[in-house]
Image (cartoon, rainbow, N blue to C red; front, side, top):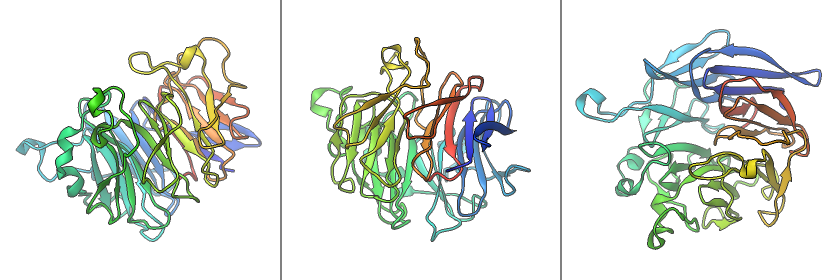
Length: 358
């Protein structure tokens, strides 16, 4: 069971540790600065934090000594600078470690939607996946809550580290078999009800809010989509619908791919808990049935929203945590049967990650 929980918020990075059966805040960094992505690299032990300064723009920081000190790293950047009329990276939305056989590789997904790779633990230059950036289908993508499309999900296949899956809002799910040199759309079966009927099955405009891959059964994926929950049991040959449930976050059990967790919400302009009830939901049978998990959560009307990176599960599969836009942080130590409030007083929460989660 993981003993460390990292929380990226509108006002800094916080760490909580499980000590004598209780969770305690033990660390804070970047106080006052939005932390948009975080990675505790299990291979090197390094910590990475993506920041979004109001005046200085997006920044990337790394600690090699568990937060005692931080060093600024080069930012992912497009070959043509903004001054030369090119795009700029407005925000790093996700950071992921490469495979065990690529100990220095770090991946970054950005706004606007692009994928970058670094081969030196975040130091040195980042390489843009030109094939994804230049593909003709990009002209069909559009923003889902942002002006530009955003690449917010990166899944590194545990069997083959050059096999990468990314998700884009709104641009669908894509897979590369060669570390980003070429790509194939893997959105078959998704439905975009926000589009005219003749375009709802268009692979290139799907708003996949978040995609996760089962660690020990990597042919199995789950997606929280704008228009419902989808799952794939055949290595993304096709997605199947598990119902029209809106939300952002999703977590899958590391060994049991039929078991997944979500935090439902009312969609579009509302974006508050469904029916005013702040609950988590769980399926144990590939979406055939769902359980509402509310023990320990507030019983009255709630207005918390759990963002796409604010729900996580640890490597053991029993410990879950999620944080909300109202600064509430909850942990379950029994797969969601019961929840305990860790704190109600954090800034709006963007990222929740256990120290051992991948």
